[in-house]
Length: 171
Length: 147
Image (cartoon, rainbow over all chains, first blue to last red; front, side, top):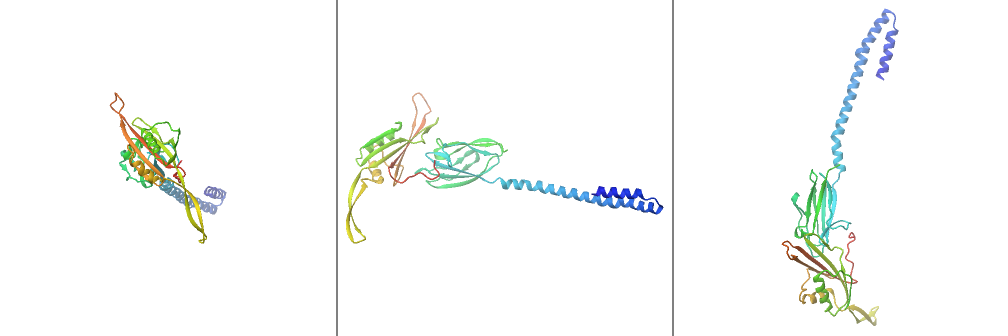
């Protein structure tokens, strides 16, 4: 739009023939150079500033939106028949896969009558309290930033109740 | 006692001890032995899990009652001659069995562990035998989310 106005004014300047017209044209030329062009520059600068601020806001807010969308992952481990089971699954002592840096809430529920169990990951210095039958506990952990494999066990039955937590690269 | 071992592999020394002990308890009418699905083994352990389902013999008992609280009647009630708690006490007194590791109204649980070192080997493995005795017809123990 600024370009159109500028082109229109230029056409009118060229069209003025008399001295007065030339003076008028000269004034118009100055207006064109200093006035209208000046207004256009300020507008463009303002527009660039608005875009830059917008981009900055997006860059600042993007990590916040990302962190809220990556909610804490819930993993329920049920202990029964001297083994860990993921809730609803039948594989004893399964390999649990986590993403690097992922926040996970482990819930351990003891469904083994008459037996006391817990959950421990030595590499993370993590050990829950001992759970009697039908007792449960929750522990919030953040997976390591680097991929790797850690062993999880039930301390009193670590020979039989032993599995792997596999930390994989975050996509 | 009627014994059904068609779904049992025969693994478990203590399980056999229990079967023999239960055979000696005359109140037990039926015993079915099964391998539990949780049995498994690894380099360092051998986990044997067996389940014993039993039914006690029954007896009829005459019970006096009143219809509408006025008319006296006699009803015949059929009831088991033994309860799981009574069986627990009976098994406690048998050599080689002893008290269970866990007991409730419908189940007795025995856990036996021993380290086995095979001949000519320095490092053995742990043998764990878990035996659960259930009374047939008692309330299901399976949790809703169990599979």
